[in-house]
Image (cartoon, rainbow, N blue to C red; front, side, top):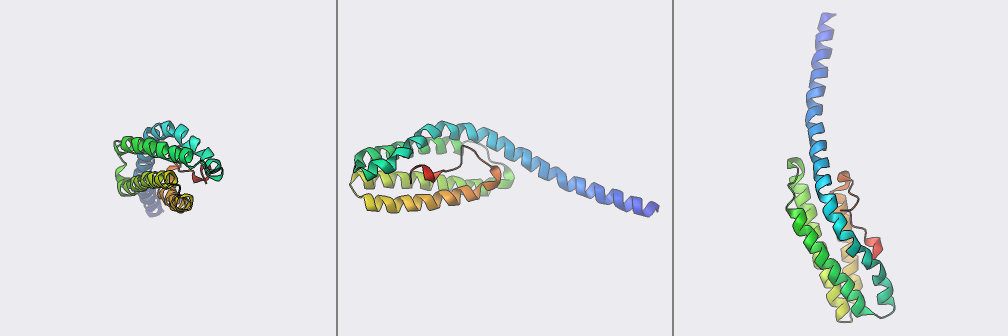
Length: 159
């Protein structure tokens, strides 16, 4: 009987030791979320303006739609610069670096959509929007377990 208690105590200790790194990782992840969400929240008003882009394109106001995408690109570029300065949790460094790469691609795609619209190339702009949607999905999937509110890309706003 004492052998069983010893084994159970040992198993319990192993489980606890295994749980400590997971709790630390969760805390580190939460600190990251707490640091980046306010940065992303600052970008949301510019992103919200994209809601009208589809209607502008539909009504032939491509220059106005172009400006919306251009401004969104500039705002997201500033946001990304700030996000790059936030220390990443060691366990997720590679994944967050990949996510920030998707953010960079999103900036590039916003700029491309703006250029296409400025040139009157609505169909080519739509092709870029499709790529933008795909990129946003990949970015969001990269950080699903972070459960971002503001750092999640919501492409439905401008599609």
